[in-house]
Image (tube, one colour):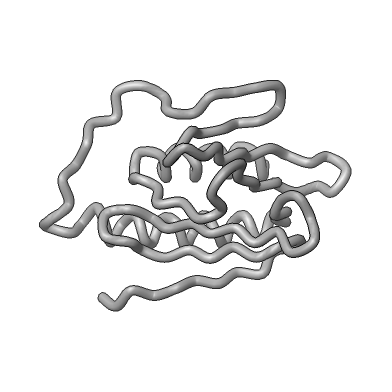
Length: 129
């Protein structure tokens, strides 16, 4: 399957997602803000894209599966975060804006391994409900 690039304009910002070898590449563009803000519909769409790309990677004969042993995320207050490639990817629910905030401290373009992607999907589902 070709390497499709998903460029999703969310309520605030822009999220670019694509397959990069055995990882999911995630790039955040906050535009004029300090994070990307997703509506529930945006969150559902991003989750669908992440699942689709993860499935392609998982089903690839060359993919070497890594066992999931312990949670990779950490919680600080109402933030869920992951430390990936010397950066910190943060998800949290914004009650005022009624949406999921996504931000990254460090590099705004990350290559994320599947075990991390699975957790990110689960946290996004939790925050949007």
